[in-house]
Image (cartoon, rainbow, N blue to C red; front, side):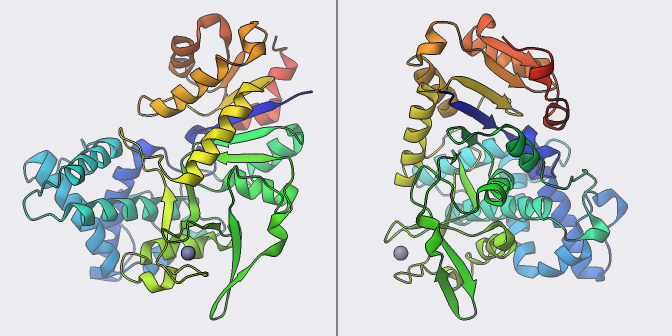
Length: 385
Ligand SMILES: [Zn+2]
């Protein structure tokens, strides 16, 4: 029986418009400038403020969002650059999140910055950028320069390749893989932990009861999701169907100043998004994340085939490295050298990351992007064993 595990990283979503982590902060800076200009002039972004944050997106943002972005770059300027922001040499998102976490942990104040607030604002700024870059069929006039394809490339890929016992693991926050699976399998997706679904109706929420029937297709989102909301009181995790993602992404912004809008449908507690932010110190203590990671471990142990698509195995993802190291060590087929890790990525350096961790002979590099891999079915035409 085959149990194929597909692991997706930012490189797979890139073609569909999602930004790489390293671009999130520079994009946030562009967004801040475009928004300043928009508010001041009620005008369009200047050409050098590309990616073009469309006027309709900017219209949804206002002074509150600008304050949040300004706070973040004021902190970066002050803490990292001694008061004058070096726009072409920003710290990485991981560096800023990690430092803020350490400051929070030691209860250390820095100048007049409220560190909790800075952390929240940085998270919100990340949402602003992701929200903009991943919106579909919106801002047609100013769609991002990155080409988006239709239909969803994940849908083409899953329709072609996926079988009922297969597992999809993603390290991305976007909902492209989920959206594709919903389109193919309706709501019968196993998320590795109980995820409730609610529809937003006038005046409140309505629970989606059909969600209980689970299929064998498993989607494991190791770093949480843009459309996941967690109630800290009752622990319920709920998602929203992709078509409502825009609403949810906006509520995640609004939670900062209008927590009532995000209250738990069960007990009214203010909910928070469940996302493991890019950081060198990552928090996976939440029970839902623990469940998901445990299911991932079991699936990797039983995997008969393993594909990494657009996932560079970055330095900061030590937990992901550990997950695969400890699980593959128990995988019988891998131990018998009958399971080659297939790495689909255009970069040779990515393949080297895998070879360094798993051994040269255990890795097969298929040197192409996700889109080309789908079109060519490359590992089949060239033979893969
Ligand atoms: Zn609750």
